[in-house]
Length: 254
Image 1 (cartoon, helix red, strand yellow):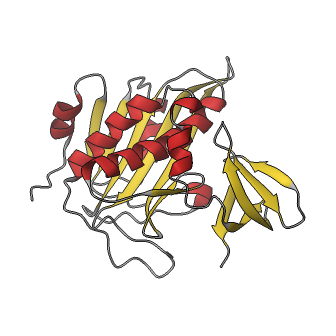
Image 2 (image 1 turned 90 degrees about the horizontal axis):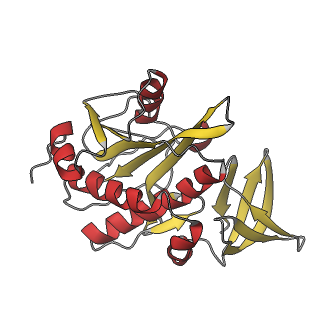
């Protein structure tokens, strides 16, 4: 299987509306996206790399990114919208990744709220959305959607738990292009356009969980996903709460 990755291949797949920038190696595609935006780049961007030397995940965690065994990409667009667009982008990104995997493989991906992608009970993809705001308008001027998918990654470091890969012969450029196409189809849509798909692919609805917020762990049961991507839970004290994305993490209870 040919698995060459470069800007020309992806640019030909995606057309000229999205500017593709490729790096053999970079600390983090999200970090590089921020540098490009700070430098005045206002294009819709797709930044890809063969490897990340300091890949980042949510809540300051790292994302293991060895060379040529996965895809490491950041998609940048400029909505000039309020903060709700970032929350929608986070949910939409997980839908886009799942749809791309379903289209190109025989696999059935699932979503662990907010946006980790699991297959067979193991994490194969992490997503990190970051926003840059305009201080004058108080609007979100740029959104960076960082996506890492393990395709053939093996031998994970000991501190990485419950990780796996797609284990399918798929060209990285093909998967990157399909995820990007799926992204452009949903990022500017309302929640109603994709929330049902998100719900049906949830791995935790009906499950006993713990959610950790501000360092405090609370036992609960996941009841539903609301119309804006929030996770509705019932605590063991019978309190109904709706969790929003951000600095909240959850894990299933055995």
